[in-house]
Image (cartoon, rainbow, N blue to C red; front, side, top):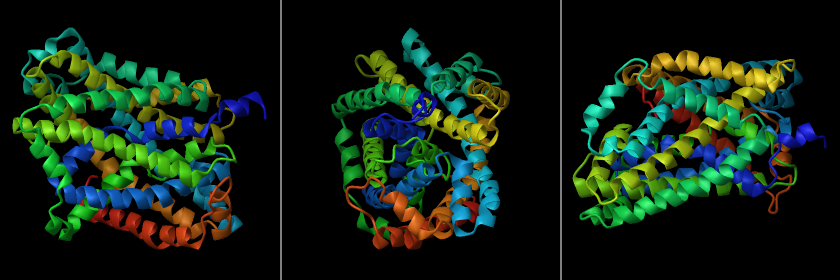
Amino acid sequence: MGAEKKKHQFTSGWGFVLSAVGSAVGMANVWGFPSKMGSYGGGAFLLAYLFFIMLFGTVGLSAEYAAGRRAHTGTLGAYRMAWSSRKKELGSAGATLGWLPLAGSMCIAIGYAVIIAYVLKAFAASAVGSLMTADTSVWFDSFSLADYSVVPFHVIVVVGTLLTLLLGARSIERTNKVMMPLFFLIFLILAVRVAFLPGAAEGYKYMFTPRWEDLLDPMVWIWAMGQAFFSLSITGSGMIVYGAYLGKDEDVVSLAKQTALFDTIAALVAALVIIPACFAYGLDVGAGPSLLFVTLPRILQDIPLGRLFAIILYTAMVFAGVSSLQNMFEAVGESLLHRFPKLNRKAMLGLLCIICLGIGLNMEPIFKWGPWMDIVSIYIIPIGATLGAVSWFWMMRREELLEEINRGAKKPSGQVWYSLGRYLYVPCAVILCCVALFLKVAF
């Protein structure tokens, strides 16, 4: 194997899992999961969420890894491979469809970089101490509603993330081997601190005591399903490229289960910080993004060593954001290099930088960012996730998919695994897509 090919392959299963977890762990875990759990039934939501995580992690995520590995490339090549396996003439149609989920990765990256810029600004304000004396609502409004308010932070986030991708999968693996363990450690420290707040016990009770009647509410299941889909980054694009960098001896189902496990732990640890703290202070746990920039800073202002814990919190959030952004950029960049082989990696990264900043800098006010992300999460991502599910389980030949799933597997998967994918996972993706499109629900 040549040096160039090795550069674009993960060196170990553990390095791959940390990178995949880094992609999956992000805002969906840190404010999305606690916010939805707080708004849709607490312990009942958690039970539904765990069911979907087990299903999607075992079936959907492993199928995306397998598709990437079999195609030896990312989104566009994987869709071409899946559709041409059914009938050779369909390959070009599959590749064309693959542009939609790929566009979804780029659109998410553009919006995601804006919110990470906000996080980096919060980190800077924590480091200099100004956040500890500010009215957090006024402070957040001062830059979230103004044009070009976080430009330096935005540039640092985009350029810094793209620089980490210069060396391909090896670079992604090295950075996530540092960032992800630190993320878990930092949030565990915060969770321990929050446990000592008066009233925190009510938050734990809400999280882990299901109200069984809530499980009869279809929207609890719909929101849990949507959260599981997007928390695992099963969007028909991002995880395919990481699968393309996997060695043939790796067990993709086992790696997918490990990714799902650590992603769930990250979501629960974040919830153990946010939900008990909100109960302790009588704050709205369903507040969404303002949890990070208004609610949590207000809590940290009132506790001993609050400035230190604020620095720790926003450091963890920067790590989570950058690791997710790496995957989005890599998914787009790898497919561009595959489609346009004359384009070299440095030129491709420069192009992504120009696109991301060119659009994103004009989307810094939260009132512009929100509609952008609504369009992405209501239309592009649900359709992309459905296209992926259908491509792997209805277009790709069963024998080829199972052959790739079982390559390197310690315990082969068979008809049960395939049936779960075809008759349960795919309908879930279709239901989620229909709910998003017809009810205009942004997951």
